[in-house]
Image (cartoon, rainbow, N blue to C red; front, side):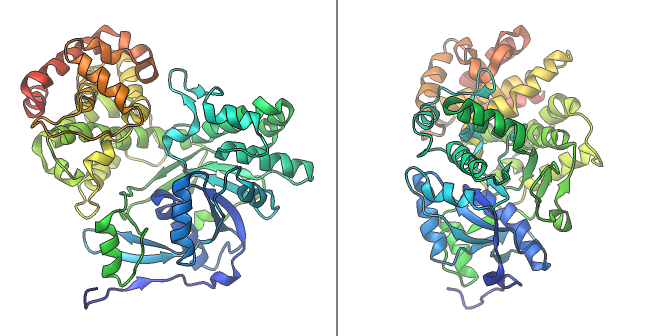
Length: 480
């Protein structure tokens, strides 16, 4: 440990006096750097002390996180990576972490407690059993079918929520609000579809009651939160902390949510949360410009053997590529947002991507394209085509993703699997080298946009060029 130990900010409230009001499922880095920090700020003001979090999980890795956090009294280390200087705090908003068990008995019991008025989730964009071809909930997913067959011992978060709501209803208790904190368009509606759809398979009457009585507010969440590795653990040590699961994050954070909480909520407007009826507008701006922007810089960086996002932003070709696609093919189709200057928002995004302290990796941005492209890129393609605009740059983004999934960089460095569907994507990408249309034949990703001649022609031209000349030369040609 270095001699110069830096200051760690601790909770300014008596944690022993907190009482639970929220069960949160999915204690990954994003939740601990976002919602937990907002609540910690609130508790530091002496407000909302009956809204502490009980942590929960439904997968094996959640049990490892539980072990790590329980060993440190459920405190999370959160290090803000400001280029002007790092700051470290111990976040105390969570007071317990439930045992992670098959059948989810402890989770269901906790959610049945009348003190719990909100159940929140961060289970990743891919965790909602969405049929990518239709955008609807997929009741035929094997995990959902298993919950339908065993509704009292469910394996998924949604099955557990259904079981708890059933128990509360039987006991004459009001239902909790279900609040999604994942980065999805219409995340409240997506979560409603998953919960109601799961219930419908085993108890249609209960499903109708949930649909009529349970609130699922939509929300937009934002904070860049890299994965934890040796660098982040060493950073915690520089503050004098031994923590196997510290969280690092950028200084910026944003949370916009619909004010629909029938059983009450913490007064989070006191700590910077925006309650708005226009979540969809904030959300579209963020998903198109920020998440879409991540995809635009991810694959060229990955193919050019660039490790970090700030290094990709420092590359003149990638930086100019981002500017041109965003300003010509993305931002023109983003509707107005209350009290927001969209070009200024884009400038903020650029500066956030360029923060060298965050050390976010290109590989993280390249992860899970099969789930992210249809949410973050293809809608911009669809809107640009509908308006008669250019999609040359967005077609190049798709071609770069395809080329990346072929499994090697321009220099020939192997790219390890980086998508839940990697094997199928890799086969398809290798076939597309000779026949580019094979790649577009993914209805779950492209829907009807693949059939658009302008998009298909542009994609084919770019993919052939990427194979023939490499990424840098192709970017130069696009930039003219």
